Image (tube, chains in turn cyan, red):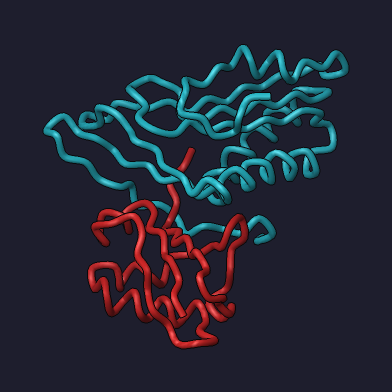
Length: 143
Length: 81
């Protein structure tokens, strides 16, 4: 099983293999990639690993609990320097049917953005860098 | 007692270090650590109200008691995903 936090390039194919499920009829993959906004050249992701790993696991479990038709949910985040167009985050959901798969993948990435202690530092063409503003960490059992 | 504080995200840049050892009175709580950090690192002070903290893999409340030699991770607003 792939580590949830890794400094290697994220591999969607591996996650598809690991979640293979003949009783699922729907597969949704969400990938977040580093976007060029006119200034960003790369993003450096850091994490507080002990809690980040646990929080990613909790997002997976919460997704499974919330969407009854969902049978598999994996969420991975890349750490370290990530270049333009590269994946920083990957969500894979398999469900019996597509409605739950789409909804669950959306829910999972939104939950990750609030619950996982990861920080994004943008690097710009002029050599400067800056931390993105962020949202206060939300505990897993918060509404 | 002494606790180790680990800085993450923008706090690391503002503190100029990734960790610090601070001296606290016996039976201090997380809130005392925050007060000490605000005094020692004034550039961080206005960020602390939106900064959570954890010991190991568990978030701790401001009124949580601290043990001698605890390691407190300071978690500023997050921006993963």
